Length: 480
Ligand code: NAD
Image 1: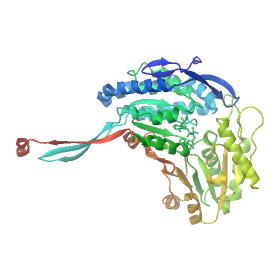
Image 2 (image 1 turned 180 degrees about the vertical axis):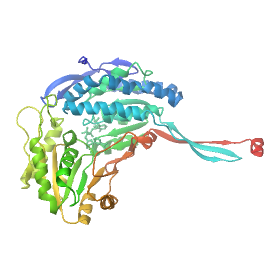
Image 3 (image 1 turned 90 degrees about the vertical axis):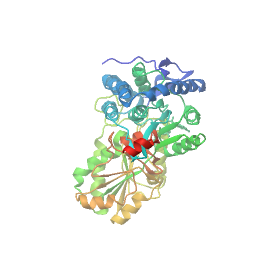
C-alpha cells in the first residue's frame, strides 16, 4: 500500500490549484489537525465555473459511449487506490477502517454500474407527416454539494450520472471531510478533458457562493433539510434545477410475530450503521408491547458488547461522532432527555477526554413529542417506542415532516406488505432497511427531499427533456 502525501489540492480546469488560504481538517477521534485543505476564494470559484462552461460544448458533443470511456477512469482510480483512500477516509471521517473500506469499494462498484446507464429516447409520433421524439439533453454546469457522513460515496454518485449525461461538473464536499474527495480529484485529473470535472473545497462561505453563482445550471445537494431549504431559496434567483436529498427520521415497525433474537441484531446495526450518522438508518423503532421488553433487553445487550473507539484501531466497530458541532447537538438532545426524566435502556453519557465519543444509546419509550423522537438524531442514539395496535403504530410512524425511508418487520410478508402500503416514505423495506442500489431510484418524500438519485430516473435529473419534431416533406408523406 502506498500512502498519499499530505498536500491536498483542488482540481480546476484540469490543473492542480492551491487554495487562496487553507483550513484545518480534524481527526474526530483525536481532535488533532490531520491536514490542511484548500480554501477556495470567490475568484477561484469563478475560474472553476468558467473552466466548466468552456469544457461543456465539446463534452456534450461526444457520444455517450465516448464519455463512458473517459469516465471509467473514475471507478478505476478509486478501486486501484482503495486502501490508501480508505485509510484517509477513516482518519478524516472517524469511521472504522472496515467501514471506510466498504464505502470506498461500494463507491467504485457504484460508479461502474452507473456508467452503464443509458438515456431513453421516446418516440411520440412517427406518421406520414412527422416524426416526433423526446430525448434528454444535458443542462450545462452541475454543482454537487455533499455531506460528511459518507463523504466519498454520496459525492461521487452524483458525479458519474451528471458527467455521463453530458454536463460538466463542480464538486464541493463538506468542509469536515474534504480530503479523500480531493485526492480522488487529483487521481483522475489527467484522465478527463480539462474543466469537465472540477473539485473545490472551502469553509462555510463556499456553499452559498456556489448555489448563488449565475454560471451554474443545476445543484445536486445532499445534506440536512434545514440547509436544503436555503439551497432551494438561493437557486431560485436564477431558476437553477435542484435535486435535494435531505434528512430522515425513519420508522421501523416491528410486528409481534418476529423472532426477536434473530431480528434484534439486524435492527441494531441498521440503526447504528455509520455510528447512526446515516440518513436512511432506522431512527424510531416501534415495537409491539408483547415483545417490547424482550427487544429492549436484546438491543441493550448488543450495545454493551460493541467496541467504540478510534476507527484506526483493530476491532473498532463504531467510531466517534464526526464533528464537534454534531457531537454537541447530540449531547444537547441527551441532556434534554435527562431533564425530561426519560430513561435509557443503555448508554446516555458521552465519553470524557479527547474525541467525540458517545456509546450506543437507546431511550426507553419516550413520548412522541420528545425532541429525541421528533427530530432527526444524527448519532448513535435511538428511541424504542411501544405500541399497542397497528393502526396506532402506522399513524405515529407517519406523523413526521420527514419521509425518507421506513421498514416493517414480520414473519408474515402479506401482513407486512399491508402495513408498508400505508407508510409515507420514498423507500419502504420489509425485513431489512437502508438497502440502496446504483440502479434503483432513491427519493425522499415530504421534507426529506425533492427529486431522485440513482438509476435511470436519477440520471434524468441531470437532463432537460427536448422534443424534436421533423415535418416530413410532402413527397415522403405521399410515399409512406
Ligand atoms: P449540511 O446540510 O450541514 O451540509 C451539506 C453540504 O452543504 C456541505 O457540503 C455544506 O458545506 C454545504 N452547505 C452548508 N450550508 C450551505 C448553504 N447555505 N448553501 C449551500 N451549501 C451549504 O449537512 P451535513 O451536516 O453535512 O449532513 C448531515 C445531514 O445530511 C443529515 O440531516 C442527513 O440526514 C442528511 N443526509 C441525507 C442523505 C440523503 O440522501 N437523503 C444522505 C446523507 C445525509
